[in-house]
Amino acid sequence: MQEWEKARTEARREVEIKRQMQAHIQMYTLAKPKNNQLFLISALSPHALRNQCKCWSFVHLDILALLLLIYFRLV
Image (cartoon, rainbow, N blue to C red):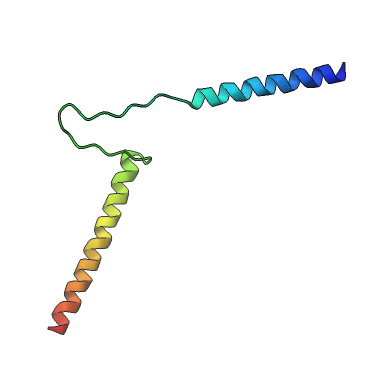
């Protein structure tokens, strides 16, 4: 009887694992936008993506300012 209960428990666990896996499987399609707009595929949220782009913009502007400062000091 104990083996039978163990087998039933294992079967329930396997069914639950399959259900959880199927819950995460979704169908995604990718197509060109109809109005020729640009699109970006990202794992980040739009807010996080915007913040990341702003941060990199400031880094690049700082590097440009530093390089211009060095250039004008050498000339």
